[in-house]
Image (cartoon, rainbow, N blue to C red; front, top):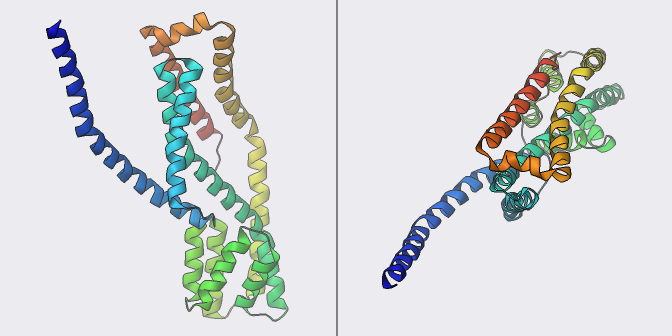
Length: 283
């Protein structure tokens, strides 16, 4: 009896010692990694004119993995659900921010034609290029108005227009914007007619958009197949789990079932990536 008590005390003491030793190291490492992530994410949000407190973002990025891990454990009643939820919580916020940034960039690219037409009309009315940028920032909706308003502010603070356009290209890495910036710089150095250049660029960008829409229409079948392949296995697994949980439990409890489940997940991810690559045509 005394030996059992001593053994239990030694076990608890060992666990307490290891916890006291390694938990602070883990927490310091966790805070270092999260600070690096927060710095990058804050920069991305600032580029999108989304201003949020760093501490609030840190709490959100810490709470999401814990909440999804708990939800996965309650849903599957297995440690695999906990691990899957935590991994999903760690991966999903950066992917979400990246998608928001991509949507904003695509919206900006779609506004460039209207922006060029407005710039060309302002130049024909006798305004300078900086005044035309101010009109664009006032007349068009975000995100193009926000970006060109920042160009105007930087130029008013003494930054050269060439550097302002370079900063704009860094915030919005769009090929059409690179053409516009190059055309403006060349016209300012050689004295070219910007109104005529903008008209040619509008024609070129419209023809390019027509070609992109045609390619998108021709590849819609492949993209739809990828979407179905991504949703169908997950929906079928959830359906089997709730209708016949005994059969599904084999995949979670048996080693062979766990191996097959991991193989199925990896195969599905590889298939979705391949379909996405094959259905993407660069124009």
